[in-house]
Length: 475
Picture 1 (cartoon, rainbow, N blue to C red):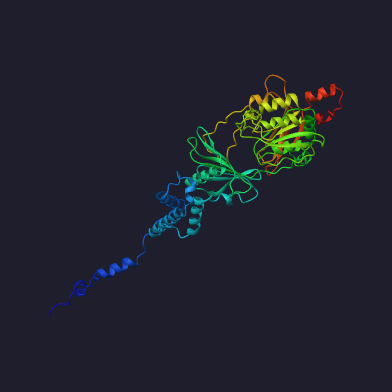
Picture 2: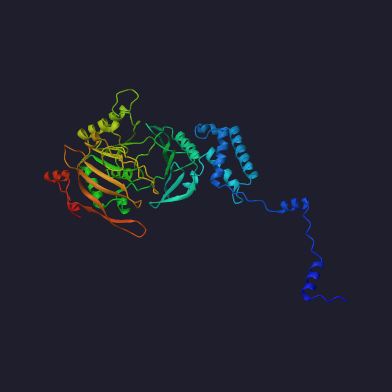
């Protein structure tokens, strides 16, 4: 009889005779394709709105060159239709490439582009808020607004090619753009920007692109007492200026654009009595100030046209009228050395007082301000430069008006020319505004102070026996 197998032998025979598992069959090719179709496609990164605008502007450039075509050409209806079609075609292509963000407002994008190509783009909206004093748009498209004397960067950004086109459109509306050696400048108004003056540069080798500045002219009362109530000047300052007019002094009121310079000139003209005569020379179309005096209102000619020219087409009749009236005061709201120096000299020496308004950042000789090559988050101040030397030699009293850092306007200084002869820029201050501190909101706090200096014309009047209140020079 066979012997019984041992335990290890029985285990080996059982494992050898056990059925082996079968391998799973390979998946069919059709099933693999179906699974591949069900798998999600890899996502494509969407373009930013700035990139979409750049692609769209490049497509418009294929229809018409934005940077070199005259703005009037874009008024053609057929061209407008082609441009709109080019915009929609480019957006369709970008959509088919799956690079448009689902959050992109396409209607707003189309409206934004067409409003800038055919009009002024976002400019009317940027200045629509009445509290916006100044809006500046730089060559890179960055927008800054000044509200309450403080600059803020606006989230709006304008594409440089569109800014160039809008600047050229503003320059065309201004009618008389400047032609400098390096920059083509402009200053004027536009019917779509009521109550706003537009200025800037539309191009030139001296800029990296166009620059636009929108400014809302500030409104100031044309009365010395109300100007004192507004903090522009002090009551003693107003008293001194009235004395200057009575003493037939030549007074120059200097200040930047947007300051109460013109308001002070008009306020002084309004102090004349009903028996006095005056000649007011203002800008063409400007209304003369309200006054009780007999005023002959005249308009100044072009800046390069001398008022004493004897040619037939010159305003020589202005001089004839002035001689006939024998006025006690001639007020020129916007004095120009090339045009007005002979007139100021004649009136000053033969007739009476001269009141000049001079647009300048400061009372210094005319000079070009050098620009800074660096970048800043705050727009740079305008270029400084005062009257020419030949006009400065005719001035007796200088009233310097300034727009301070907090946006407020003050008469910063009233000075007298140091001597009858010599350096016309050497001045003796009589009144000054002295800032002392700033509030938490950034407003400057200060006071008007007298330097205790008494003007020469006051001393001469006292020497002739006239009563003069000199207490105003001691406070």
